[in-house]
Length: 219
Image 1 (cartoon, rainbow, N blue to C red):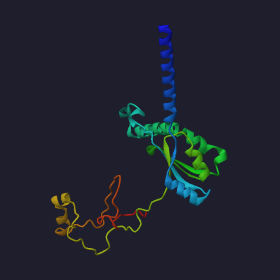
Image 2: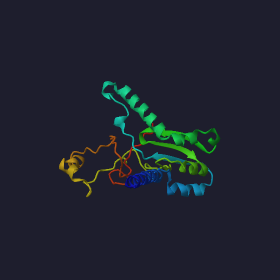
Image 3: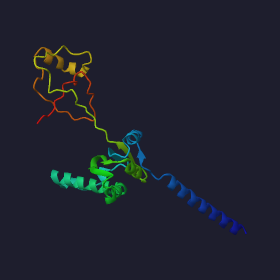
Image 4: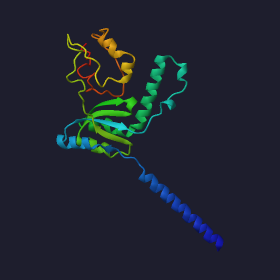
């Protein structure tokens, strides 16, 4: 009888373990989130198409995409990584791509673009399609793909005849330490006609040293 009780207890524990494991798996299924700003735009636009960006939050480890890159030429290395990114992203975005590529939805969603490095896709969609994509079990967020005008009011450089002032109060210490302000004011090298390219993740565009000093490639 003791053996029978022990077997029943073991069976009960196994059933409870399976139950809670299944419950946990269901509870942790990811779902696409619709950003509040996109919801507001959709409410205002009715069923018109609006630009949308769908960003996936599952990180892609580039190190796992392809091996032996050192054995390839730079051009082949770039091509191999890009192809691997495409494969990874298409697998990651497969649920959404099925919806977007459905011929019945061609009037409701258009202009698909793949942003492989960002694990994202952009498109124009109406409210109905956004709601359908929002029902997918993907770890992603739908945002309004707004356009930002960062260069409004900029010009190609200082106005003709404009003189540089003494170093501003907010000139950083390391510029003064290398004598940058003296080069401007004592030697007369103002940088007039010189365009400097800089790559960064963000720019303080209203800073006095940058405002109205950005060059625009008119060519």
